[in-house]
Length: 540
Image 1 (cartoon, rainbow, N blue to C red):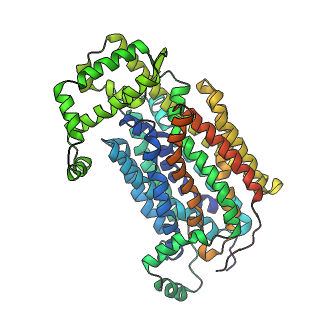
Image 2 (cartoon, rainbow, N blue to C red; image 1 turned 120 degrees about the vertical axis):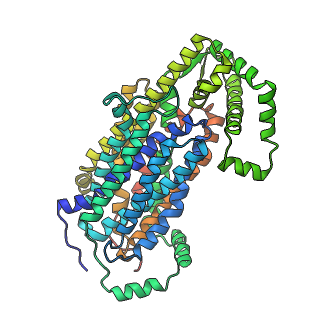
Image 3 (cartoon, rainbow, N blue to C red; image 1 turned 120 degrees about the horizontal axis):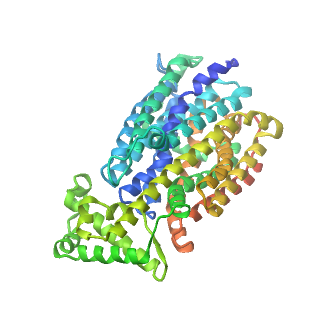
């Protein structure tokens, strides 16, 4: 069946749900590291905690793509049932995330949230291929990029706006600011509302032969479907193989940025340091406190409990045991800082250490001097200002992406899609590398321009190039398989970046952004290898 060309508002409505989906992703990308650090995670633990996102994508995306090809609901159609299910689950996870009482709860919620977002997002990619003819697909994916950019601008800036424009203040002396919590609540409303708009205003084409469609799908069992979903990586068409390398290096770079931007900017641009004299006071009084007999015996018993007790302590942790674990982790980190900065004039503190030393219950027993306590408060304020500014930076690059997405169809016609994508990726790589040389918060906004140009292209050009090589009946399936090359590089990044930073760069997180920038430039060069012709390369 030949597809009819759709009007502007029809393409608008079918893409509008991406506004809410990006609310979820933007809040996650800009704030999850901040939530983890507030709950006591060190910068070395951040990549492992972030593994939830790519692992859930690796599992969920191809399965959802495969089964959405084989779904037809009499009222909701093929893709829209998945839009609705994902929106409900993701909105609930967005409400839970900022209220996580412990690190393991936040990590678990990230798994659920990312899986739910993927349930909604993955069919949206195939949605464009389903409804638009070839000549409109670049426009359709560019419209998605536009809404992704707008959603991310607002969501990324929400903590900053709520605090500075609407006077939403922190409810406590430490921990996660109220402005961040309310941002997640508003994000949940936006996610569900915009996806529901697309569901209610968009129609899908039913299969031409419904009886044959049902018969074919009845012959495929659930486990056969799951198996076939993951075997698709060995059946990729040529264009997808060429794009897979581009995607690998692109998303390695993006994941590096999402993990390390908060820690890089707060440590590189903001003042998170205390004098060595102040650190020595913290260190000595901290050691004296934990070496009291009760603390010492309690920490020693942590390693002696049975396996079943350890499992129980994860799911039903006692306040006393949780405190002892935090003390033990803080002790290890302070010893590491003491060794690392020996002979230096100042010491760079992590957010986890700051919050622990300012904890109402524990800080009383330390009895730090007023000068040291004031410095800790100042450093904590610097971290929160830096964290809010990361949201502004992310808003700027997403805003640039939203505007630049409107130019992409014209640039693609003028230079070709692959040349346009190459130039955009190189701009993004240079933007990431430039952060290393920037020492002011306003200067960071210049770097975000290049990253925004790259982000606009990343969200549209690879999919536009790929869609022409795929048959319509397997559009969702292969779009899901294609996303292996979004999640695999993120897993690789999480597995090696912490080690590389510690071994080669003294644990300085800013170098993760430099590595990411070089990876993105390499991805741009590899784009020139892609065969960008609208010729279906596999059989129905």
